[in-house]
Length: 193
Image 1: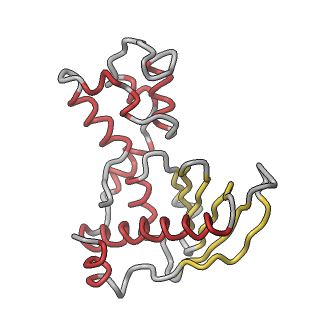
Image 2: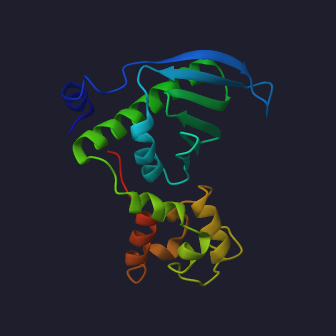
Image 3: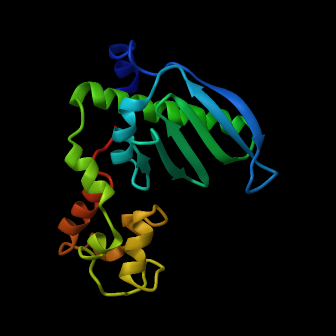
């Protein structure tokens, strides 16, 4: 389904606007900015979907917040529709990041409307995912082709988003293809198209 068609079909439920409310110097680098924005809808229902779709996301139901790294930006989306982003170059980049976030959030809303509420077991499985569980599915050759000293180090970096499955060339082999698919489903159980 095209993005335009989806927006027409779900016009009453998607986020129409995310407005930047506050800009301040970034704590990590005063040459950059951080900002707070507000979506025109609460986002509580889409946080679990985003958690399962974004490989390196961290999610707290208790706090009503989801955080993840996107490029060099720490992005946090709150249940009440508030969004914060750090390490932003300027206002133009801020506007671009807001638009990207809006598209991602809307894909999650459409996923929710077309698939219904998520099974809590899937969310719990991702929360319990550890580098050891990923390591068990890796080739365990410690070949270093991925740039890491060991397959376990690769597993840890894969889990926190510093590496991708494409960084392990051995996972592309016929023998390891099924393992690559399993790891991908563990890290990112759903795909937002």
